[in-house]
Image (tube, rainbow, N blue to C red):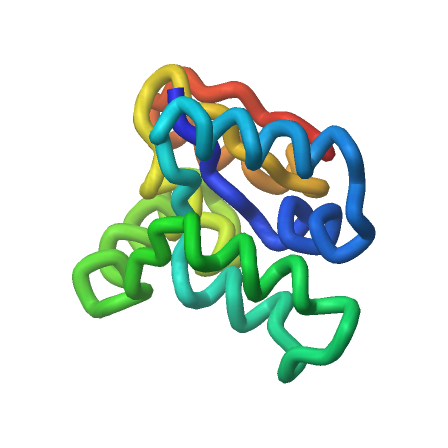
Length: 126
């Protein structure tokens, strides 16, 4: 099981949420790095500063996939099947595999996408 990190996961880190810090540490200990993509980073990164220091440190242990043409096309196809519009969410769901946990503050937005992708994932709110 891997952690797939949506913007809500990074915001929880910024707030030093103990539950999120514990999940990230457990992934590090298990040597199963969390995964996200560059579009999610764009949603949360605001140029550093004290509040983002913990996010900057966490990024060293997160696999950041590019939101490239292939992932963009696949996300567009998933959006069509799910009748949704958010490419960042669709691309994030496509990074997941069965059994993964997607950490998100928007489970209602991701659930139809996971269902349309025929994925058995757990949507977890930090």
